Each structure stands twice: as structure tokens, then as C-alpha cells.
Image (cartoon, rainbow, N blue to C red):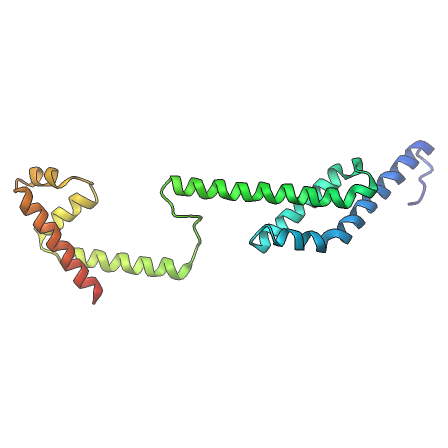
Length: 181
């Protein structure tokens, strides 16, 4: 680094030392990056997670690495990578638990093919429901959309409980046959 004559000698020395420290930390990271990637690959399943973890390690190195002794820097990088991979793993596990708690089966994966197939199945089901006799449609609608019990459905429609159950069973059988074609 060239000396700036407008700065006092102590400030020139401090600026030069800071630049050297940054360069030293960057070299240490570059020399260790391949090993860190291999280390993280055994801990994290996805390449994107590994890259995210490496970015955090680099940022922490730039922020706090000047307080680490040069001979301990490589070990420090591995410790930071280990801690960060564990934090990332815990975060993903917490997200997974949240999805399960609130009715999901896992982290949703956007699959355009699956979405199109689901939309097509939904349309087929709606069409098949419209082809059912009106009395069957009422029972299916009350049961599925209003979440009424069969006794509540029977009371609302003024029919015996057995009739409500039979109509629902027949409606489901017809839907199954129509949709399997």
C-alpha cells in the first residue's frame, strides 16, 4: 500500500496493518475453502445450503477474524463452519416442525407438473360432483364444505340418519367410479 502524505505516520501504519489483515484473512479463507466445502458436504444435504454457510463463514471472518491469532485461523474457520451448519440444520428442522404442526407434510416444493395435475383432478371432481343427483350433492356439500356431522345433515334436510349415510356412501361410490375412468 502506498503511503498517503496527508495522514500522520500512525494512521498510515494502522491503515496498512488493516489492509494486510484483510488480505491475510482472505488468503486463509481461499486456502481453506475447498476443505470447508468438503467438511460441510458431510453435514448439509444441499449445495445451496453449503454455499450459504460458506458465505456466513466468510462474513464472520471479515468481521471478527482480526481477533484470531494467525496460527489458529484455520481451526477457527472450521469451528465457525461447524456452528453455522448446526444453526442452519436447526433452523430447517424448526421450519419442518412448524409445517407439520400447522397441517403441512413438509416444506412445500413447487412442482409445476404436480400443480397442473392437481388442478386437473380438482376440475374432474367438480364436474363429477355436478353430475350427481341433487340430494346426493346436498349431503356431500354439507359434509365436506360445512363439516357437519351426518346427524346434523339429517336434521337440516329432515331425513333419517340412515338415509343421509346411504346417500353419502352412494355418492362416494359414484365419484370413485367416475374418476377412475
